[in-house]
Image 1 (cartoon, rainbow, N blue to C red):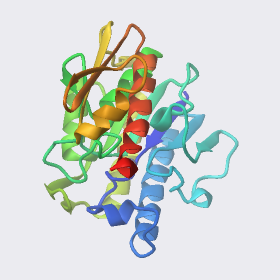
Image 2: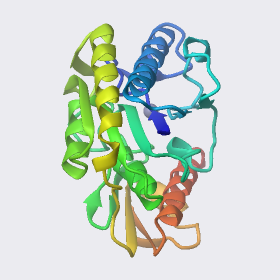
Image 3: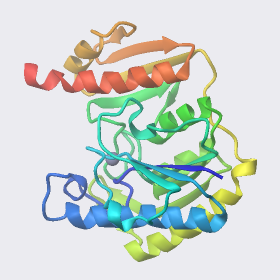
Length: 277
Ligand SMILES: [Zn+2]
């Protein structure tokens, strides 16, 4: 059984502020990257306990250089992807060789009343596929689904876990905290979260046979509502994007990976808008 783990950071137990997950912060970030690493370690250990053999971990937050690598188990069947940019970003390295996907440390989508809610970029007000407003988890799950690989574990805040379980009821959800606001949480302790993630990962491996790939139906239509008009000005520069409003662009494709790649590129080019003003 081969498991792929995409690990984000905002959904780590206790984490409630950008400072705690901003690699340039020298006070709180070092503590929280350790919490993140130990949650990922718990997912690895739980997966192994449930019978998984090969595990590929993709560090999926910010610069994607957060995990304290030497705190992960030493064995040849565990590999870790670090750094950015990566063509497939939070899903780099997922292939047909994977039997199941874990999402750890995930957070709510842009616009939700939840802690550090966003969708890949602060420049994205909403990302909508075939009429469904999407979190990073749903966008990523649909990419895995297009390769026939199901998501079986999601850990993070209650909002994102609930959203994922509505879309993928076969998955195991581990809620480590509830939002009080954008920068406040009511959370399990890190140790309690790790124990819950270990148990969830173990159970999730046992559900792989019943799990289904999550997919949208082709043709695929992506609408990006941007935070500012100038973000849409920049995304519109890319061939294939159509301007449909002051703060909205659209991209259509018969192929989901192409749509996903277009979304990633759009977030990058939108970020270029800032220095122009
Ligand atoms: Zn992140």
